[in-house]
Every structure is written in structure tokens, then in C-alpha cells.
Image 1 (cartoon, rainbow, N blue to C red):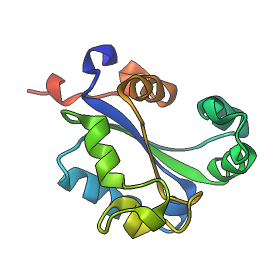
Image 2 (image 1 turned 180 degrees about the horizontal axis):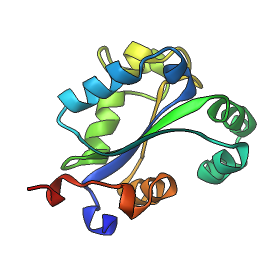
Image 3 (image 1 turned 120 degrees about the horizontal axis):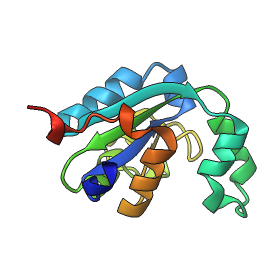
Image 4 (image 1 turned 135 degrees about the vertical axis):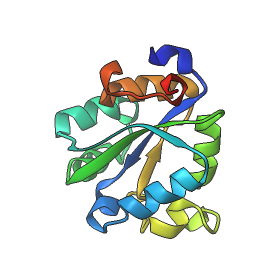
Length: 149
């Protein structure tokens, strides 16, 4: 089911720092106002094992262990977002990974405090978007806009 949404979905993760600071609602409002449909949403905690699996592509990077500790340090909110050109548009909305360089008004400009504690994750390409969405959600948990009357 989700496979046919290639190019129209992306995964967002509101990270532990933003959840702890109670930024979830303001972030979700900003996302909705930007024209995204929320197809799935859940608050959960990421185990270190799951975090290592999700971020496996960064396994050999210096920041890997710190990233795993951070992402498993508290609740996260995983969200599947639906919109034409979802990945590209969402990357623009969240801003640069390092909030120091994030444009004014982007989510990271508004809610991030550092490179590591940058408030939000967004899929970096359409292939990863599909893979990441299915990491956090089963097809039964996804309510795509196209399926509504």
C-alpha cells in the first residue's frame, strides 16, 4: 500500500529534546500549516538496539554512539507526512541540520538548540522515506489522504 506513495510521503521524527521541551504541538501545527497531511503518528521510545538499526548508515561515523544515546534518551514522536514532493518540501520546512545555518522561520531555527539536539528528523530522499516509514509503522497504522472520501 505505502509503496504506491513514492514521492508523496516522508518520515518525521520529533526528537527527545523537542518532546521534553513540549514543542510537539507547535511543530505539528507548523507542519500542518505547510500543507502536509498526517498519515500516521505515534509517541514511542526508541531502544538503543532500534536506534542502532535505524541509524545504521552512520555506524562508522564519530557521532554514532552519541546519536544513539540521544535518540534513546526519551520519548520521540514519529510521523508519516503526505504531500506532493513531500521529502523536498519537508527538508525546506525543517531547515539545515545544523540550526546555526537554518533559515529564519524553519523548524530547526525555531526549536533546535544544537547540531545533535536539532529537534527533528526528516527523510533525506524518497527511497529512505519509504524504508523509514515502514521502520516505525505497519501498513495498518497508515491513513493516507487518498483513501479518504
